[in-house]
Length: 290
Image 1 (tube, one colour):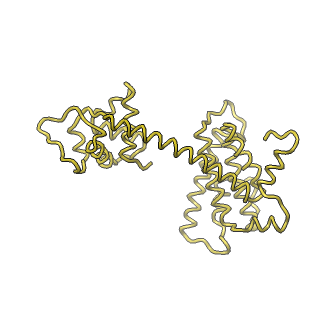
Image 2: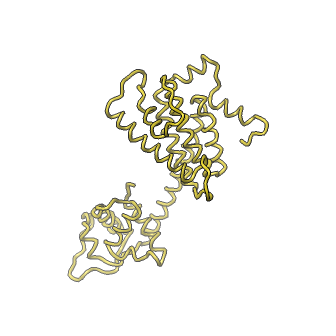
Image 3: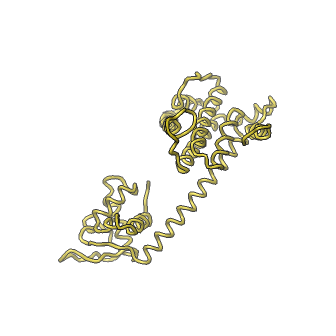
């Protein structure tokens, strides 16, 4: 995660509200540790956190109650070093800092809503324009997300990627083995030539890395999604389901983008229904649960 001074203020505000974690504001060392634990910076990012602390102090969002004897505070506008953060103690957020933290939380919530909307629109786009082979998993994913059925959404996300890969490979004249794993399918589908153009090292390297993402999705399905019998109920959360959906949409669109206009043209020529048509037909069937 790439953080900002406002992200640090929001983190410190949350930690200060609990007696169990308020000690995180005791010194520069503890605040750096808290930022690393929260993923705002990686290990070794002490100077970045120190810079944020200096910014927050300079503009009045953060203050401190004591300074080591003989130390002189830096003038405003001078970049703080990690050492500078350690000569001050017992930091606290001011009213301005708390307002900034609340605004950061509000913006994050708004951004999350936008992310969900974008994923929903992308699924609808795949149903409308994608090959008919992906209609069932895309429709299942769409319904599972809308109905908060988290394990089913994760299972459908994995199946959407698998169907997209198999459809792309078939369009490229390759019949994938029924037992081929998701990572191998994704690597093969992502490595297909686009419009007859050979892929370069950059594209092939990206295909390998995206295949690793597909593998992670497969593991998530095994651990928390439907598709396998399990000894205990799934502990999948809404966040897990939304992550699986976003990853599945990204991978599926990447795989199918190499086909260009092949699918719409083939549907027009063959009269085959689109994914959206098939999904609507399936929902209209008697006894449909959709």
